[in-house]
Image 1 (cartoon, rainbow, N blue to C red):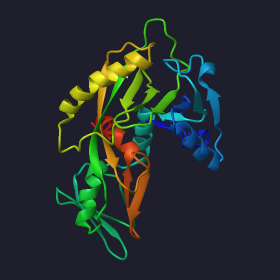
Image 2 (image 1 turned 90 degrees about the horizontal axis):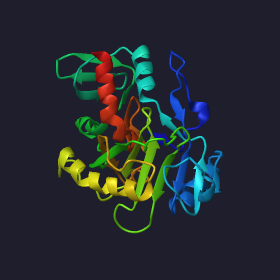
Image 3 (image 1 turned 180 degrees about the horizontal axis):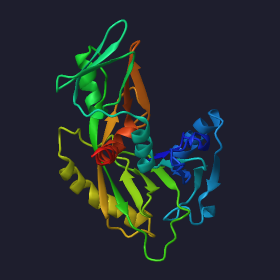
Image 4 (image 1 turned 90 degrees about the vertical axis):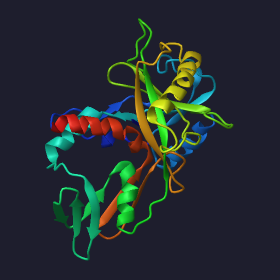
Length: 284
């Protein structure tokens, strides 16, 4: 999970002193580069516009024109994040059915009949957050859409150690862009920027959407990333949140009252299935 807004100083460490963020840098090509550069300048973040011909070994394919280079861009080390959470939290397994707020406390009700009371609560239930909020009288806007990203292997002899995360978005209709990032096992994950055209989760199954998008992603890799073998070796089925309260398919929104905060995050939602599996494996 790349993040152009995460600065190196926020790379906190787990109890085992493993870095929470893998610094790989971020490159943005296409018309979106200039706008993102302006935002980073407003935030006093270290970034620069660079000539694509000077990138050398930072990407799996050639890029023409000027790109945004954010050297502080990083990928979240999910295994480290899960280990850190497991070391710091008391975990109770239960399905939450309702979050009830009073003037002095918050009570979390579960399907097994147990409940817990606290002074405040943060709800981060992914695509279930809206339903839980509605039971508490809060309407949270947004729809969930299918998204699948694929992992590709480098061609024999290709050095991937300096590869950066990469975002590209063309102008025009349809899935004209993509995002990509290095993953810990030496592969490169690639996803089409298709959230605006992708169906809602209730319109098509994850398997059907994966089968539809895979050949398009393979074709993209074949055309734009010649240092990768253009056959996906793994797939991650995700969900993207689309809402007028978000900047396209990007960002995080917090709703709530005095004692409850309801968290909705577009990018984090894409990794939710993988994070959930890691957490589940950790707690078994």
